[in-house]
Length: 176
Image 1 (cartoon, helix red, strand yellow):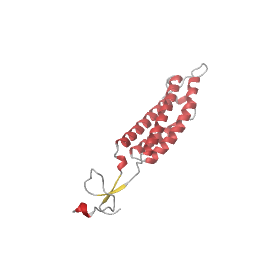
Image 2 (cartoon, rainbow, N blue to C red):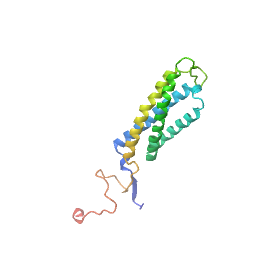
Image 3 (tube, rainbow, N blue to C red):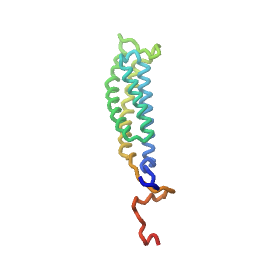
Image 4 (cartoon, rainbow, N blue to C red):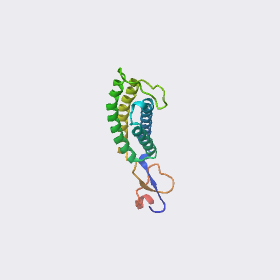
C-alpha cells in the first residue's frame, strides 16, 4: 500500500452486515446458554459426554468472538458446527423423554443436587434445533455479505459519494 492511502472495508459499514453480525452473536450466546442448561442440569446422565459438551461451548464462545471481530471464516465454521449440533440434538432429544419413564434415576446436576426433570432437558435439547437452523441461515447470509472486501482509499476526509478508484484522474474538463 502506498503512502497516502488507507484500507477501507465498505461492506462492514452496511446496516445489514452489522445486524447479521449481531444476530449471529446472539444466536451463538443462546446456543451456549441452552447447552449449559443441558450440561449442568443433566450432568450425571451425560455419561462421559461432559468434556465434549464443554469443548463445544468453548468453541461457540470463541466463534462469537471471531464474529464480533468480523471474521468471515468464523461464519463458515459456525454453520458447519451448527449442523452437527442440530443432528446431535435431534438424536438426543427423544432419549431425554425416554428417561422420564419408570426405572430411570432422575438427572443429577453438576453440583450434586436433584436436577430438572428429564422431560425439561428434552425440551431444552429440542430447542437447540431451531436455534441451530437460524444460526446456519444467518451465518450463510453473513458469508454472502463479503465482510473481507478491502479497498484502498486516499487519506483525508471521507467523500460521501465514495472514493475515486485508485489511479483515476479527473478529466481536464472537470478540473477547469
